[in-house]
Amino acid sequence: MKALVVGNGGREHALAWALLQSPNIEQVICTPGNGGTATMNNCHNLSLGLDDFAGIVKAVKENQIDLVIVGPEIPLSLGIVDYLREHNIAVFGPTKAGAKIESSKSWAKEIMTQAGVPTAQSQTFTDALAAQEYIDQVGAPIVVKADGLAAGKGVIVATTRSEAIAAVAELLGENSGKLVIEEFLTGSEVSVLAVTDGKTIRPLLPAQDHKRIGEGDTGKNTGGMGAYSPVPLVTQELMTRIEQEILQPTLAVLNQKGIDYRGVLYAGLMITPAGDPKVIEFNCRFGDPETQVVLPLLDTPLDEILLACVEQRLEQLPALEWKSGSAVCVVAASGGYPDAYEKEKAIAGIDQANQSGAIVFHAGTKKMQLEQQEQIVTAGGRVLGITAVGDDFNQAIAIAYDAVKLVQFVGMYYRRDIGHKYR
Image 1 (cartoon, rainbow, N blue to C red):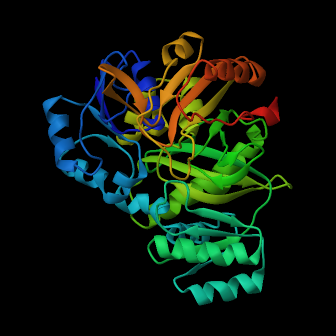
Image 2: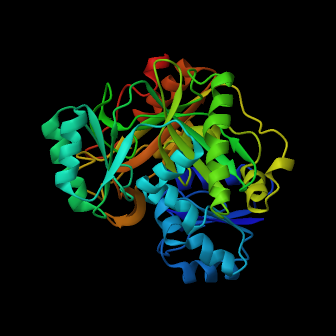
Image 3: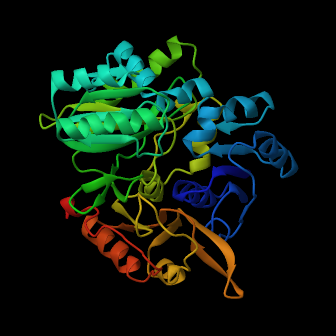
């Protein structure tokens, strides 16, 4: 069968790579894709925009695509799944109504309240003065979140009142005129990505992202500077609680609202010092960079899981099978990210890193003519996700960082402590 992956980041490269591991998949097309998907065997890119729904339908028909997988949240929130379904195209991802669980944090909070899901106390504001009065009332530290989509960077953890007031001014001005202010939770953050056909829901292996730009989890939030999976903190007992207390009740409320949710329900969780899971946020798609460490550990063919969700027969699918061991992903970013950074810097050493035992997933790259030859160059803030699978965390970390040392581009920056808390 043939699959089409919508998106151009590291998550989409990982999805395309995982699909091509399956004996059922003969070809993957990525739109628009990146430098990595352009250079994989049995994979090629189409230059279509994420919002070019008509163009994607045309490409599906011309290339006889059997399944479309939507990677990013933006086309999901714009209704790409609704559009493709209207054209009788098999597509993995929630509808526009379902994607609201990520595109509106205030709406997601309402869903959690109705579902009785444990989460941080919060209030929603459209007025800066009212938000300031609330901050004065509850004090700092406190978390200020843009209500809408913000590419993983619309969250500011304010440690003082002045930081919180500044966060309100910044996020209220940049987004939809609405923000959520919630209590600061302590503990360990964990990402649990679950697949669902709207009736049955199955979690994938838990992962832990590293959101902050600086080592020791310092500095600004980013889209993610690295990840590892599985997470030793998440025992089978805790995963059962996450399913029963969070995932299943949330899906039930979505059903009650008449939302046919077939895709990924991603729960960003805080595991409190007492060992209880609380929801920080929900996302409507595969995580990035969590996907880059979860999928290399997956033994069940990815296409079989996604098709079972699309065709609403996930309950009939055998238990998911996983490789033993651990996976670690280190993100190589452009200097200056998550603020301003330069692009179109030639990247060296990708082939050597792949040959060293790592898997180099491209996040922000493209192919272009540079110095009279075609080269892979930087095209984003997060450039590469250098991933390794090992028998344990020590081995996976060692393989990943040995591979990182083989890659060079001007301004390259990476954290040196990904996964080290479990070393």
